[in-house]
Amino acid sequence: MVGMEELTSTQSHLLAMAHAITALDAAGSQFTSDALAPGHAAYFAWLTERLTQTLSRLQIQAADALQRSGSHQLDTESLDALVEAGTDPSDEQLIALHGHCTLGRASYKDAADLHSGWLGIPHGAAVARLNAAGSLIAAVTESGQRTEPNCPQLADKFTDQSTDPRPLISAAHAIRKATPDLSTPQARHELEMQALELIKAEDSASASKHLNALITEHIQAQRPAAALFAEAGLFPRGMQRGLMVYLLKVFPHEAEVIESLRAKTNNPNTIAGNRVLLNELTQANYAAANQPGVSPTEPIDSAEPADSTQAAVDTESDEPSNAAPEPPRAPRIPKEWDDAPTMPQWAREAQATEPDAPETPQPCTDPVAETPALPPFEDLSPALRHMTALLAVLRANRVGGKDPGAALVAPQVIVHLNYEKMLAGAPSFATTENGLPLTAAAARTLMCNAGIYPVVLNGKSQPLDIGRSKRLFPPHMKRALAARDRGCIYPGCHMPASRCEADHVDPWEEGGETRVDRGALLCPMHHHARHAGLFSLIVADGKPPAVLLPKFLDPDQQPRRNTHWFSAAEVLAA
Image (tube, rainbow, N blue to C red; front, side, top):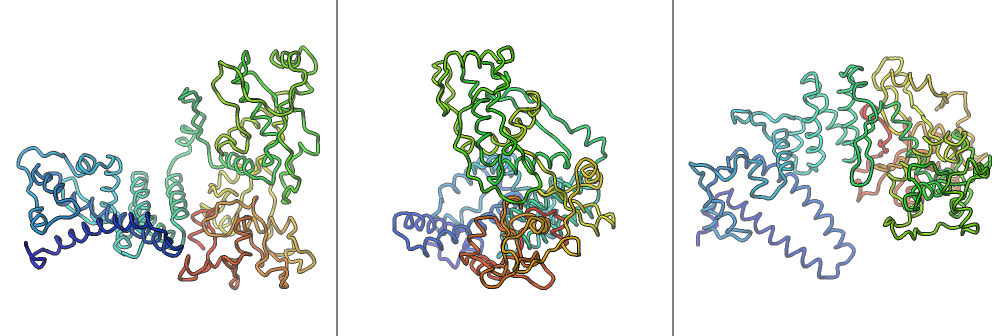
């Protein structure tokens, strides 16, 4: 037996990794079979996640090692010896694992082929790891020479063992993908520095979102309008697996209408959120596919026209609806079809054969149809709910302008403008309520086609401090909070302002006042969490309220604000 002192440093570390795999497998089996105390289980999960970070870094380092060592040229005997050594190699095996490169044709043509053919990694993932190694460790020229990494600023941070490498890998991938569209090396350097700032200040998901927005802004600024118009449009992609597929490419100011529709469809505080009319519309339209003799393309209305109090949607109201949602009703034949000549054939047959139809939708019993009865609207996937709402808007004028779908969802476009940036001619002074950055031209377009509602954060236009005369924040103060916070201020929360509640930083029962500078938007979940003592709200001089997370989430105890709904430029400026 060869003594451990005869092993090189590399061999000793390889042996340690092999033993670590054995130890980890044994630990996992033990934790699965034994009853764990809550603290031990949490520590087990924390260590596992920390190990995942380490493995993410090791994967990139291993890809670099395979490439620079030429491991794909190993002969068959050397590869066989690696497999035989396994996770419990002897010292002799470790020494023999030095390997020999073949002088003839190798089993693998390059490092990516070795990844996929021997390690079983998908080829695309292997290429991504090698590209990340080139960005964060060392680049390789066409002649095989190693040079400085393509992202030197990110590479310096990548070597820090205490840093989660995954956001850095993601940023390097995004920058590399955008490199052909960047005009100068300076633009790439600026993106790297901005990526580091975002990763330092934000959670990984928000940092990735803002970096992609920055890259899009860089590229969009360089593309001529003619190129954008050439790619925009609605493109049919044909029938795929029983569904008609369309690809929609729109400008940012047009996309905000769709984003607003999606947000309002998800909002339980709106008529659309109550799901009653949308449920009827969905049941009627999609149930047609299961009705014998009915064409799925034939117009079908779902309900009687709602009365004026129910059909009207106040798009400016900030007050949530307190009315309890009605129980689901069965689709009924509209009153407009009482006149026989205007009534479709399927409706006349339904009246003649089923005069006493039940009030609740019945499952399809057609032996030919195999599609089950459609579930309630609330149980549909978000994507299908959004499509149903969009189709309701498109059908708004189908039956003499009285189709109930017209009142289901009313998109509302809100643009936040930075007045100082606008005067200075900055490229990113406008952002929509849903976080989409707008160019100056797009912002002007929206202003021409929509009403502008000014939001005054200070000054004499609106009283933003009503002391203790009212406990609840009035609508104009909620608009001010929405303009400032954009959504729930808890870091990482994706709840928009329309679904948030105004909360007092200083509890009302302890003498707190109803003031914008002492108020904040929180979603219902984080509102309850705050009052349960799971985190705190603090206000620094001259700054808006911020969240102070508990030490186990933020050991540095830094005040944090959610930036999901802000543009990347706003985050960097803050």
